[in-house]
Amino acid sequence: MSVLHWPRRLRTRLFVSYVVVILTGSIAMMLIGTVVTKRVYEGRIGGFGSGHGRGPQATEAELQTALDQSLWPALLIGAAVALVAAAIVAWIVGRRLLRPIDDLRMAARRMADGNYAEPVAVPSEIELASLAEDVNQLGAHLAATEQRRAHLVAEVAHELRTPITVIRGHVEGLIDGVIEPTDEVYALIADESARLQRMVDDLSMLSRADEGVLQVDLVELDLVELARGAAERLRPQFDHEQVTLETISPAGPLLVLGDDDRLNQIITNLLGNALTHTPSGGSVTISAGREGGVVWVDVTDTGAGVPEDERERIFERFYRGAPSVTTVGRPSRAGRGIGLTIARSLARAHGGDVRVCDGRPGTGATFRVTIPAA
Image 1 (cartoon, rainbow, N blue to C red):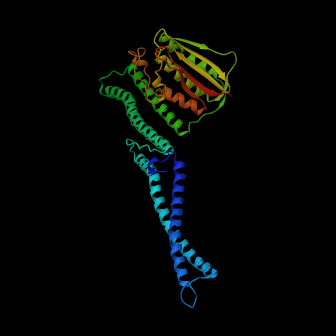
Image 2: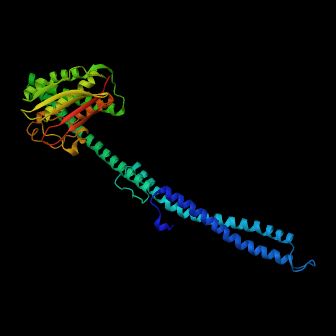
Image 3: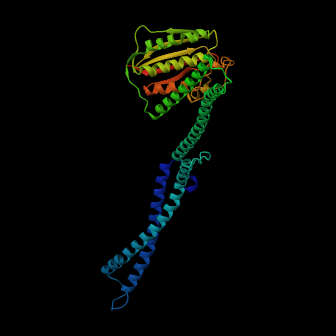
């Protein structure tokens, strides 16, 4: 098989390379052995036919001796030539096979040095091509992660700067006597301090969840009662925004093993997200059920919905998406962009998950939290 038309599978190429090396050595050994054996044998026969008073015809014993004396030198010389030829062919074939592996190794080194922009060339071998595509995908993922990390630092700095600036400005105004020490001023400072504390607590929780060290105290809970309690606590906020909040509960309890505070925060964050993206006059519905060994709670709103390409990105830290008609002009209800991230992290800490079931634009969205049943 010509080197220019090698098969695409690596295992086939390795097999062909072994066959080529073996054939090269065998052919070299046979050719060299034949030539050397013939010459040595003819020389031995010529020696037997002259001298010592012997006639021109060699005896059978002398022919056997000549054959034995010519065979071993021919085999040794043929084997040496075969080894050299096989080594040369193996080096050429191995270099061709290892070239894409060296490219992958260099690409891995570049990624280790933080260079994710240069993709590795995809070789023709099917197995190595799949590996190269995985390496390129890994590089793209690492580049996106690095970009999100830089974006996260900038967003955290921005989010912390606002309350700190407000607190500092009012405190300096109080010290200079520019601002009157009224209850409203102190309340504003307290609110900004609480906002700052919530931000720090949320970031700390996300960090512990990512590291897998988030403390979760598992007890048997009725997820229906927990969701209904969270809804009742938030109902005044829904009434204030003129958004209807409905709960649809199954006949019996839905028991799970979970942390009361953590599960409450999941439902609260999902309800807060639904309220943020539901216009006045709309509605938010909470429903629950069980499928096999999983208990689920759906939070459905009548807002603008979630576009297909944002169904996973909305769970990224500080990702808010493009403003919709339901949120324009309502800056007071804009979130920090980490509520859904925290909800998914807490659900996964329980062995469950949070995902978007229906995100068609203009028809609202349904966020489903799933927790393993007790």
